[in-house]
Length: 277
Image 1 (cartoon, rainbow, N blue to C red):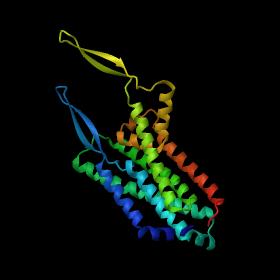
Image 2: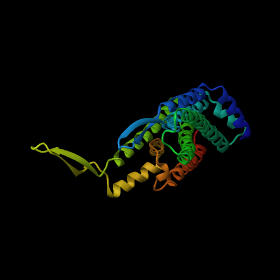
Image 3: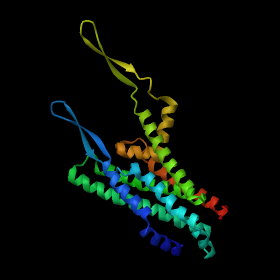
Image 4: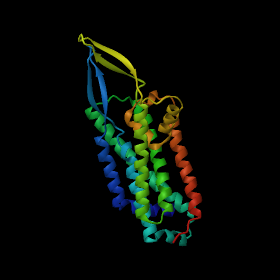
């Protein structure tokens, strides 16, 4: 497996896919900010845009989807994966070496983007985030990278056509992110909202009305679990902040570890039976 890793690292240094995804993740992360509410001494409020050092989590899944599908898809399209078997490497070693490269690439992207985000935070302001929350969110992002890499390695190693695996990985990354945004939006609906009515006398009366879009009961519990357990939902929560006040903070990293481990196990079992053309 050591020889497989060395060969993959040599390819990685010269891969335009790696450097393109790396640069895109670092650059795009600087466009994500968070809104901070400041209260003045007179009770007035002001909305300002703060710096979010973990904005890269919004693009991490897409970047890894592109990288894994194209970087690993070349082995199928060029037939180099057969050469590894001819050289005596086992299917398990080939699969795990590719997973390690994809996971390591995700961690390099996270580390570089986080370093840039922290530098920007020091220069332009803290963005309303505490150091403990940044540390916890950063740990979540590294586990997210593992979960994404495991899912996309599974697809890329089982799909012999590079274009098909690229489309499948991108659709999965977009789908997970859209699901996370939708779940977060539904859960953010308040149970009640104020409604102001102007009487004929000109007096303004404010009443509290029940919000028909509020999700409660069983479905709220289910949506909260899905938001915590899915990579897209975790990405949205990292951007939204307040992770240190989360009811179940342990569920987020645990879910990523379980997803990554399950995808790895499934990939190893299925790849052993795959017909390599």
